[in-house]
Image (cartoon, rainbow, N blue to C red; front, top):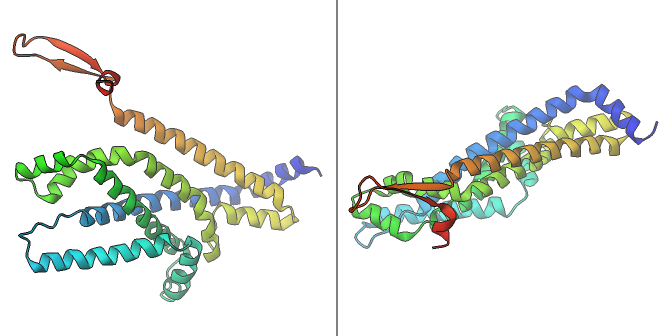
Amino acid sequence: MNFFQWIAKLVSEYWRQFLSGTVNTLVMAIVGTAVGFIIGLLIAIVRTVPVAPGDGPLKKAVLKTANVIMTVYIEVIRGTPMMVQALIIHYSLFQRIGMPSMASALIIISVNTGAYMAEIVRGGIISIGRGQTEGAASVGMTHMQTMTLVVLPQAVRNIMPSIGNEFVVNIKDSSVLSVISITELMFAAKQAGGAYMQFVPSYVICAAVYFVLTFTITRILRFLEKKMDGSDSYVICGSQSDPEAEVRIRKEDLHNG
C-alpha cells in the first residue's frame, strides 16, 4: 500500500482511538487553561497588593512571605519542562495515593499553566493606567474592589490574545502527558502506528487533527475578542447647549485624536 492508503486504513481502523485521544486532549486543555487562569488571577491580585507606609509589620510580613512563595512557584514551574514535572509529581505523589492518571494530568497541566498565567495577568494589571487605581482609591474602594470592578475587566480584555495563545499551547503540550499513560491524541497515534509499524502516516493524521483544533479555536477566540471590543462607534448624547443632541464618534477617530 502507498502512503495515502495507509492513512485511510489507519483512520478506518483506529478512528475511535483518535477520537478518544482528541476528546481527552481538549478536556485537558480546557480545564488546564481555565483552572490555570484562576490560579494566575489570584496570584496576580496578591502580588499587586500595595504596601502603604502605615501598614503594620504583620501585613508586610505576610505579603512578603506570600510573594516569596509565589515567586519560587513561578520560577520553578516556568524553568522546568512539563514532562519532568509530570513524571516527578505523578510518580512521587499522585500514584502513591491512588489518584487516576487523568485527574493527575489535569492537576499537573493546571499548575503548569497557572505559573504562566500569573505573569500574563500581572502584566495586564500593570498595563492599566495608575490614575484609574488612584481614582478608585479616592472614592474609598478597597484593593479587591478596585481589582474586580475597575482593573480586571480592562486587563482581561487586554490579555485575551495571550490567554488564547496559552490555550493553544496547552492543546499541543498535553502530548507530553502520555508519559503518565494518558490516552491523549499523541498516545493514540503511537498505538495506531505501532500496530502496523507505520508511524509516519499515523503521525500525519495526528498533526492534521492538531492543526484543525488549533486553527478552529484560534478563529473562535478572535471572534470573541472582536465581540469584547464592542461597537465601532459611540453615541454621545446631550450637551450643555443642546441636551437633545446626539453625536456619533468612531473608535478610530478617538485613537487618532
